[in-house]
Amino acid sequence: QVQLVESGGGLVQAGGSLRLSCAASGSIFKFALMGWYRQAPGKQRDLVASITSGGSANYANSVKGRFTISRDNAKNTVYLQMNSLKPEDTAVYYCNAYWDFHDYWGQGTQVTVST
Image 1 (cartoon, helix red, strand yellow):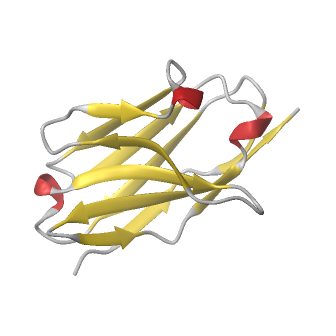
Image 2: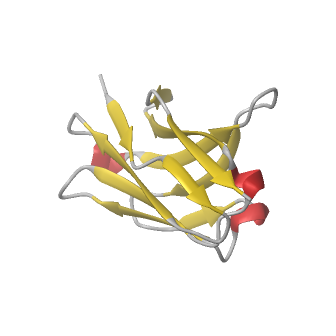
């Protein structure tokens, strides 16, 4: 079983920055594909960024050049650095771990970007 706990969300003005963290329990972290998803009210949950166990990252077009995903396997933690935030980035952000055909989710953290 894997447990994921997100932190770092909050309220920020447009143009500002936030750093999300996701701490994972369990020994599979360093093997798992890790990702950040987001869900705005009334919309589906979409992939924001993902990172393989080897450190290869992938981003949604809407965040390329602004967001950076990284992981620290020694700390069982994945990060999402968000810069140049826009009001349309407002959503609940979820951490995801994919391993052995199983998806694991955190509880989510709210990010609100004001104009």
